[in-house]
Amino acid sequence: MDTFIDKLAEKRNAQEIIRANMAAEAAKVGELENQIRFYDELMKEIRQVNLKTAENASQVQDALRECIAKLESVQDNMQAEAKKAEAMQETEAQETFAQLKELLEEKFKQADEFLHKENVKVYRNVQAAVVEELSKQTQELKDSQEEDKGSRLLLPVSIMILIGLIANIVIQLFSVTITL
Image 1 (cartoon, rainbow, N blue to C red):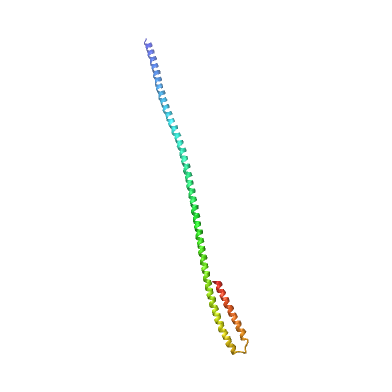
Image 2: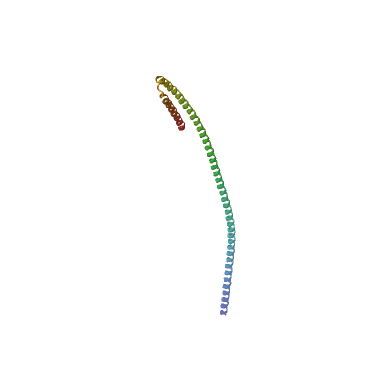
């Protein structure tokens, strides 16, 4: 009977070991199931974070597009302002040029008037000098004619000298007028 009891004890032990193994395996399966549930929850959180990240990335891209559009608008405005400023400077330069041109024209007109007045003075002075010299030469000719009544050659020579003198004065007067 001892053998029977021993066999029975062995069977019990084996069954208990099997049951213990099964219980340990069941506990291990439970732990693994808990771990799987935990990992599933982590995966769900990761997916949600990933979705939020994708949404945020989309929002950031939209914000960047708006910033780029605003920067381009500001750049366009700055270019337009620069063009306006350039146009204003050009207009001011043209106005200044026109004013300078008018001033120069006025100064040229004043210079022309001054030169005309001076030329008239010179002409009158020359004319007075010629008339005075002519009267002196005429008087000298009369005096010399009275001395040389017989010499008729002196009169044409004197007239030629007077004509040459008048021509020389007129030429000088024109040259003075032209150089001024």
